[in-house]
Image (cartoon, rainbow, N blue to C red; front, side, top):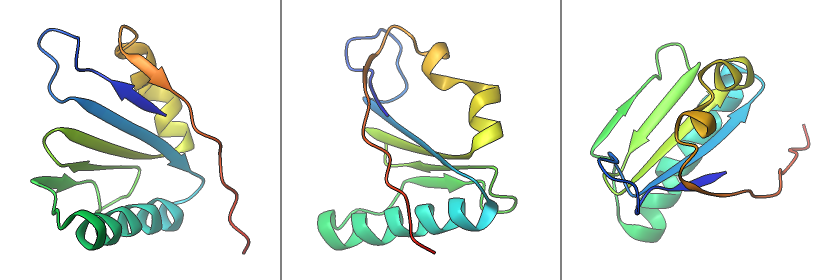
Length: 99
């Protein structure tokens, strides 16, 4: 999902992108893909990144956009969509990977 935070007072970013995967390996793969694609397509590197140590929740902060990549249980626990419930939410179709 993406959360549009632009109309919220005191929002720490303009947008949150939130997704999840089922394992540490998958979370890391998604994060690596986001890093590679943003460099390739937008010539953008994150201002800050964290969470690669245990990959339960990887955060990639591009200042205006913050990408949150969770393991599924961690996403359910923190429930950022509810925390930022006043944001405009856009849902995207889930893609399944063939392994």
